[in-house]
Length: 146
Image 1 (cartoon, one colour):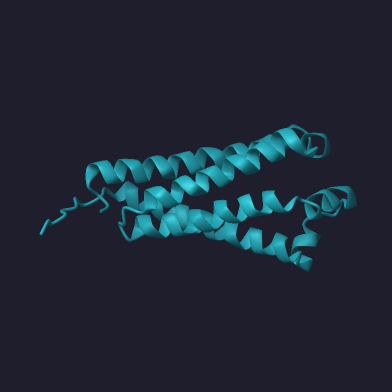
Image 2 (image 1 turned 90 degrees about the vertical axis):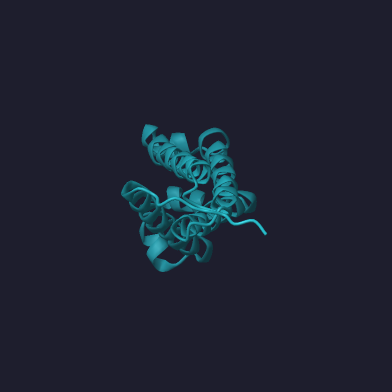
């Protein structure tokens, strides 16, 4: 019988993991708003051209969005619970983020509609996705999660 020992994570680990859970919970909320096209969601887009573009997002992109936020949420929760499967969940989330990013930056006409500002949020999401995935890798190697 093998026994796994874990080390106590530093305080910054808990801060980043907690922020990641809140961040991904907001992502889940945003996904649900868009998937169900709620009135609150539609009100965020006063320009009919932009609303039309967002409503007509292809299904495979919405699937990538769902993958990114739900796996990100579960991975962040796993970080807080100090579970090693956080790494796999956050990797799947990161893949979902990358698929969305490819669509938003290279396939859709988001740059034409939104202008250069269309790049800022997707890049922030990608960077944070890498940060929390790296945190899971580091936590696993340091014995903070098992």
